[in-house]
Amino acid sequence: MATTYLNRSSATETLRNEGVEAGDTMLANLANHGKGPRYKIINGRALYTREDLLAWINEQPVIEPRSRTSKATPSAVSTVAPAMIDGRRGRSKRSASSAA
Image 1 (cartoon, rainbow, N blue to C red):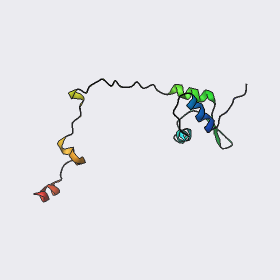
Image 2 (image 1 turned 45 degrees about the vertical axis):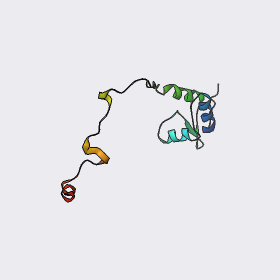
Image 3 (image 1 turned 90 degrees about the vertical axis):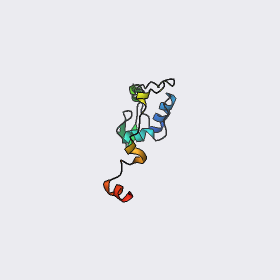
């Protein structure tokens, strides 16, 4: 049986039909960064197989949502050291002496 190849537009539509929120340029952007589903370049065009698209979907990690009922404990609350207020690490000797 011959393999059917999908251009990026058809591949994107296939991803959308599988529930993936895919923008029109998503596959091109992923390919540009060396990520995304496998593809072949034929006559200067990226072509995908449905099998490779589905395999890529299944390879994505499952991320469990955080519980909305958990409350921060005092040890989990971050504090800001006084020297880091306003994004400054503190005054240098030069600026401290001129402020006096």
